[in-house]
Length: 418
Image: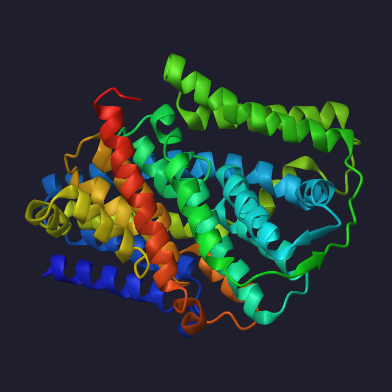
């Protein structure tokens, strides 16, 4: 009976996530409530001391996994929150963009910027900055839609190759399924898919756009912190490859350097202390991850995720992973990925790379399938589920092309060709 109740709670939580825009309740509140309630019920109805100890043991393991993910995201998001708040990203954009540019070139510029920026920042921040750039150009509504669709796909694609770019990529890495260096290869098929979509969307675009350039001066301190952020990413990769240092430790060390540099070389403005930038990160996103991972952990405890194993037992992983990516357009990719990792499915390197790409990019197929899509829908007037769906065929084509290249790339890596 308890198993049925826990599964029902998970379904209710999932419905709360999917229908967030309808019920107007933040998905973080929903998932955190049902996630904690699930574990409380397991403790209350354990039935024996031995069962209680088992529940307690699995909860501790679950919380350890969650805390590692949380701390890494807090460190990475604090860097980005500071640089974004200081206008460094916007200022750099205005410096590199020309005063006048064709719509087609602007489309490709937007694609490249969104792709590269989302590798370093979280998807929400990357989408907000990219959409702000688009909205400042005052393009016709139909062309603004094309740019917005491209931003959503490019942001989701850019994050798959780096653990700083997408939480599902980070989760798969932390589970020991792929290495940091191997993940880099995903940037090639992901970029190809983005450029393919940009080419398809650019058909019929022939106008010119004038850009009002208003670059803000960059303070030396802000430049130093941007450099510390980049050095932290490079150090994280190098330390993990050479010494197996956990990325969370490297990023927390980088964050501490940021705080010290700001203190000793900054203006020491008591009205704008550096530690306050932790408050600007998306804590509702972090709480959503906490609730989802608690829910998935409770389902794993009662073996309710075995159906995923059966799915992979009835079809080849290359097809199952493709389906999982498409499914992530309707079901959030975080619980999907967490559920698959909890089942401990055995796959080779090619399959894990395919899954990483699929769940990272597949959410782009529908506007409600990713955080980037939800943010874009809230910022671009007229961007609705139906209007975004008009581009679904082009999005599916780009997603499929990228997925096929990932599969070919994975096979080449396994054979030692690359």
